[in-house]
Length: 126
Image (cartoon, rainbow, N blue to C red; front, side, top):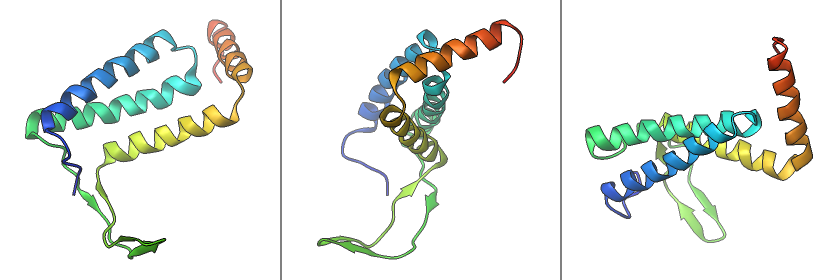
């Protein structure tokens, strides 16, 4: 039950462009692990979906759960979404990033990265 609004080629090209930006950000900000680790998980999920698009021509969604019907404010959903593990990793990482972005102040992130760098340079593990 995946999304088929546009062609598979569009999703493949769009995914590759986003992946390039994410990998560039990870490379240039590798000292900020608060963001680089979840973005690496996003990149891994994107790579999994890209491989599916290249090999199969579409992303294979294989997790299909049917719990109960939803009817909220006139919106009726008879079937839950079908998804794959790459979607799970991407979604959980994005939710984590949004929570971090709205709860941690910019100074705390900079302090964390400088603290991690000093521990790493001294040969100590966390």
